[in-house]
Amino acid sequence: AKARGKNTYHFFSQDLNDAAKEKLLIETQLREAIREHQFVLFYQPKIDIRDQRIVGYEALLRWIRPDGSMIPPLRFIPVAESTGLIVEIGEWVIWEACRFISRQQSKGHDVTIAVNLSARQFTDQNLAAMVERILIRTCAKPQSLTFEITESMLMGDTDAAIAQLNELKNLGVALSIDDFGTGYSSLSYLKRFPVDELKIDRSFVKDIPEDTNDMDIVAAIIAMAQKMNLRVVAEGVETPEQIDFLNNNACYLVQGYFFSMPRAEQELFHLNYQPLVH
Ligand code: C2E
Ligand code: CA
Ligand code: CA
Ligand code: CA
Image 1 (cartoon, rainbow, N blue to C red):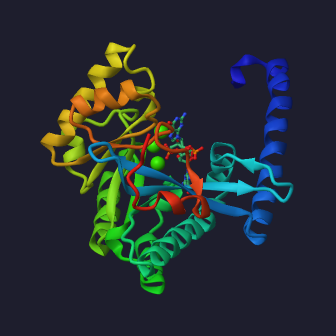
Image 2 (cartoon, rainbow, N blue to C red):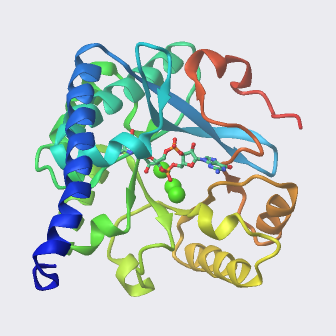
């Protein structure tokens, strides 16, 4: 960029300045959001299409501003990540997910919750100890908790990543690779990580059945997951045609708007343990 000359640099610096201002504003508001308890978790069911039953939920973070507007995670998680605030927010997410599990347990419901981890959390040396403390304090069963991590988090320092995964696994929680297929991992690479599940990224699912290329990719991921004894979940499933395709390729676990959007806990009640009728 330096080689582009002074004027060009000047031209870009205004944009940079605006971006920096926007980031600072979000950062200030995020600190306030933590203080004022403006975060909530929404839950999206994961369905077994063979009997249309809910086998678990993914917890998805929502920021509700005092004026009632809801800010989607993709607008604030990058700022939370770059400022480090994600560590504090992410800890709250784990607490809240475990309290949810615990509340369901006390009603006699065994429920599985998947929690997304950010890169910053994943490289934190204290993560497993923190999770253990939360599990103990909430009495949530470790088997009821799954962590979703992305392939890119496993790419850098592989030994450190494997050590972190093992520490988490030793607590009894399950591990899932999110957005699978977007991060260039190879089969041999994947074999080294002690994970239980792959989630096929929505980008490969959304154009089924029009895009035969994507259908080949999805079929290959499913076959590979089966060979490696990994559970496989398709995300972003919206149509009956997509369900048919997945069913025909023996991928039975799905998430997506076809069954349900992510919802607040109070709005899940009627869904719990009922077969979904469509
Ligand atoms: P993700 O983990 O890949 O989550 C799936 C996203 O797809 C969610 O968006 C969900 O609402 C959306 N989705 C589910 N089914 C469908 C569908 O059928 N069609 C379409 N178009 N979208 C669908 P959301 O809730 O906006 O979250 C976006 C991303 O933000 C997540 O992607 C995840 O990377 C991140 N995120 C959310 N909650 C947390 C959190 O607690 N911690 C961290 N670190 N990241 C989070
Ligand atoms: Ca996820
Ligand atoms: Ca995902
Ligand atoms: Ca995704």
